[in-house]
Length: 476
Image 1: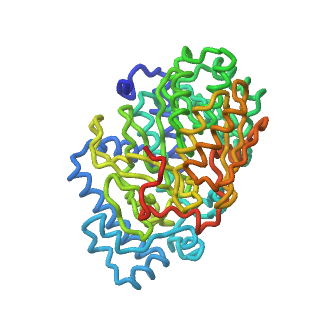
Image 2: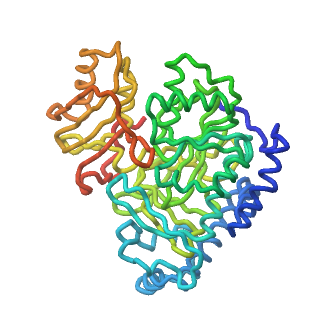
Image 3: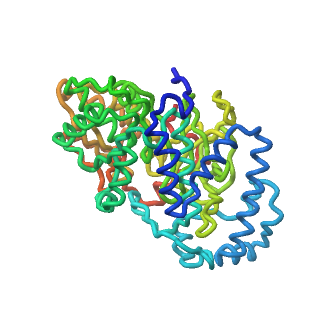
């Protein structure tokens, strides 16, 4: 059942009001961000009639394309070569006249993707968990949009900046960047960071103790990390549903149903899923009525097939993003590598922002059967979660004919369960698939704090998900 919607100001403390209304806005102004104005605009626009919102989107897209066509050498040359006139854009579908942009294209463009008069760009990089890291740049407008859009979505849940927060996040590099100023800021805003890459039993004890002592209003973290903490507390018989936690925000990994259930049950709060990436930006967020709303005022999300053709609602394909707040280093029809489905239905919350019906994971979150069928990583979840005593697992596809399943398991898990697992995997992936299983003491998270349930080591040409081949098996 969906939780009741709370107004952002409902029940908040005077201190929270001071943080969200005075201290954090001052912090953003000092950094040169317009995030407060962005958040206020988005909160006004999210319930506009669709015709009004679509007209805004088209006008904003047209200005964005005209701007990058004049200021960004790569786009200027691209548009000239195609005979594309951005001033004649009358619909977001006009984007389909432009090619898709991937990481290779960004690397090849190099400095040509920077606006000639860009200032205050910050260098960023993706983690390269798929073996394909990317270096890119972000300007002040994009930073302001990310902060403002996330802030808007946070307030959907009746919480705000300044409410007590525990964040389970970060790589060692990010944590080392917690200098004195940032630590002071987090203390003032009542936000505490716990390192997601240190998930040992001793640290899990400490994390649970910290949550019980801090009694945060909200949690924020990776789904795997929060569900691991929840499972640890449950195993210890420690109550966590009386701490006053209103919502647990999760992002950056595929959220599995079992994780949502564990987090919600142990912490006694709803789970709000967010979707985005360091490269593509903050793209969508779940509202209290369960709708995954695209941040469509400033972002165009397309679903495309293997040939780059746009697909309609209900059809699975790759998520492609055009972010109109990236004028200094544009992301234009950028391939995220994620597979999703748009919904054609409105959300009962009343917001007119379009919905992502499903986020099925990255192109590497699929297994390849021996006969060439593409099988969703969800199949792993549905198969493994039925086995008793399995605390954690990881599936690694080494080749088209061999898959390794690593299990952290305790009694009552036994040899019969292992036989059952192999039997069910073969039924879905091919009887000639070699399934190697091993019980291990622990499965570590990656250096960035994320945990990967599925690791696909196939060559890129075999990993590629082609929606034209049909709906992946295992998607409900």
